[in-house]
Length: 422
Image (cartoon, rainbow, N blue to C red; front, side, top):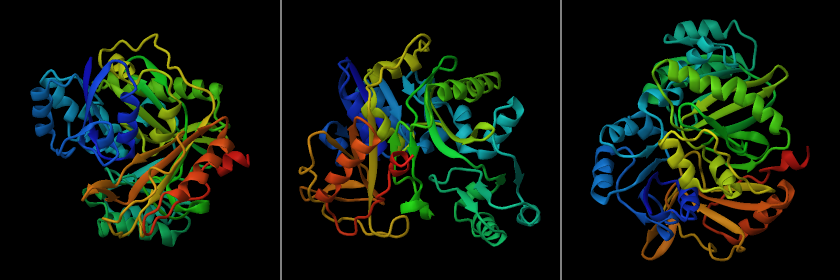
């Protein structure tokens, strides 16, 4: 029987804990630091994800059999390298492999070297040179900070004025800190956006179900970027043939390319894709489970997540198929008033026990205070429902959301709507 540690404290980690807890092979789960939701089904541990040395000591002391890393920051800091050096089983790529997310410049250059389809782009370290280049390009155009920026480092600019403002924010005002030391200026791809996650042990690549997420805060994709306001799975426009094409042209070549460059990738590889008139092209890679996509993907997984993760760690993924249930899943994020700007925390959350039994509520920004669950972040909850199709799943989720209440709560009302209207 396995003892598992899940690193992180968001809705993605709650979803991972929820799914791992269903495995007959798992005896006990810890989360670091977790949230009010993970605390209901696992033991929360007061260690921050960035404190990788303390995490390693905890794993050694408690004899943890598998550590699952949720957020990107500890992966970029080398948690997998430290754990491997100490002989501690870990699910997640090494620092070198995780650079595919930690540096957009590295990722882009890797794709260009190995012929992996992606958007045209140029890299700049000088604001003046980037400004001159922007003024010579057609619009819209995309400005990307090189480093980690909590999912907010890519800005689509519809005009020269917007593009120069974005460049100034990233390179001069340093809104993303050192992530803006280098900037990519990229052509804006047209088409339908989709995320495809795949498990890989460094050789075998096994795709999961595709999903679509919503990054803008408001309905109709209005307003500023967020960490993600909801998702649905699977999109009808991205079927089995397309999954196979992306596996052949993107996922497998990327895993091979990383291995050839001495960066064997073990974990989950997230490909953010645009399905263009010329075929699928990579927008970005992430080195971990996506948030909020994970919350919509895992409820459809019939297989044993713990067994799949151990197969990745032990490099025996070849020949393993992932079993999925039929139907669809929709997840809607409930956010604090003011998010993604300034927001208040410590607000009581009511109605969590009033939702239907087939609705799952994954916690993100929550904590216990005086015996009650209160808000503790920008994205507070993800309300998830499954159904025979997207329309059915949407109906179930949106019928339950009004039962959950906290001051300032806001959410998008169009998650999955474009799929229904397709």
